[in-house]
Length: 238
Image (cartoon, rainbow, N blue to C red; front, side):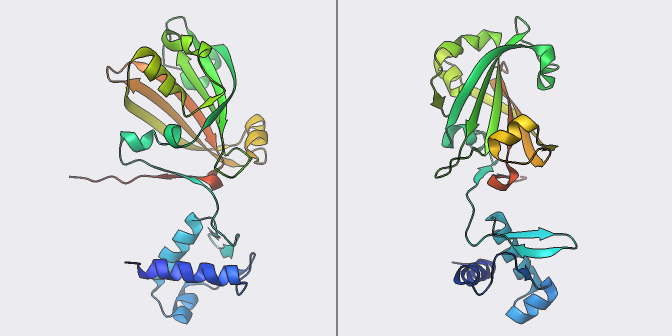
């Protein structure tokens, strides 16, 4: 059964696509528009949230709500209800490898506090691109401790993830994932790859993957175009 706010978001999208509402138009204040549409303000807000999630609307404090697209925008949605969903990025999109090199622990801030047997790590760089698009929405650097660095010689040009190769090569499985999301200013080198302006807002997720014995398998540093990536958390408290 379609909810009222979903019906409203569908109706607004149809008006945008028909030309009745145009890209660049600012929608009326919520209180006034809700009365005009004959719905509650909370229903209108939910409809706005849905269209914002789809990349059709943009809401800014004191600037109002603006139409920025006439169709849903492609983006990757990662839900974090469990370990399987946390690993969805490495399962549902393809990582195209762009290079490997050996780096020292001290050279990479995200490796501080972690150990590799030789104090060196295999760095694997790559990008991910949404289906139907040519510009990557993600730039990733993956750091593999020396114990698993032999995978460098069996990595193919692309694949879903590095950790899958480690699992298959060493007969282990991911048992725990710890990750941190942070808003950053996009560095110049990455901005060029994912199509953002230098210092534009970007989302960085740093994740540590461990096997079932709590032995570190890899550390990934992934930077995303925030318009094309959504992180959703749904936690149930018993």
